[in-house]
Length: 173
Image 1: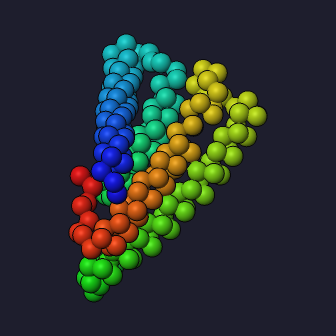
Image 2: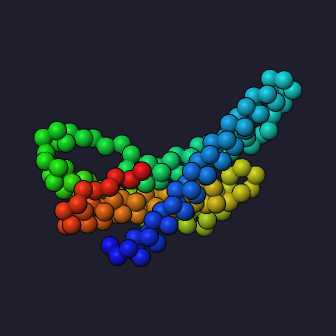
Image 3: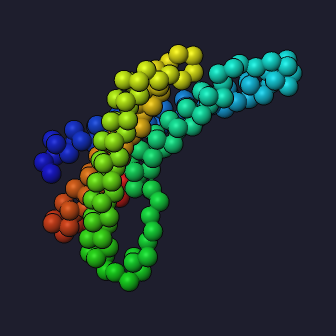
């Protein structure tokens, strides 16, 4: 890759990393504060906030989706690695390219259909929490699948590039 393009992609990658890490920390901290706060309110003051449990469930959804983006970013997602012990390094790279292309395709299809579902939620006027449109709370799902698809495609491009150049792949940090 030309060095200018590579530098711009690295800058975008760093921005994405920071945004994902901040989102994970904020979401997890908020979830913990709400859960502990709800326990304290119930046990000490014999009261509670009605919508807290539903908000915590939505935060868990957001955490799972942002976490999946981060896992794909670092190439640390779940993988069944049955062939790595018998294949050569080049064979492993070819298999990883095929598997990552398949995963990108699956994520792309899921992104499309979750977006379609979001449009239905919007059309039906569904709501969560206190009259918050459901599509606003669930918008993370298609966005996450698009970003995971993008991350897989970047990994494929890096693997193909390194194979063509005969250079070892620099694994994501």
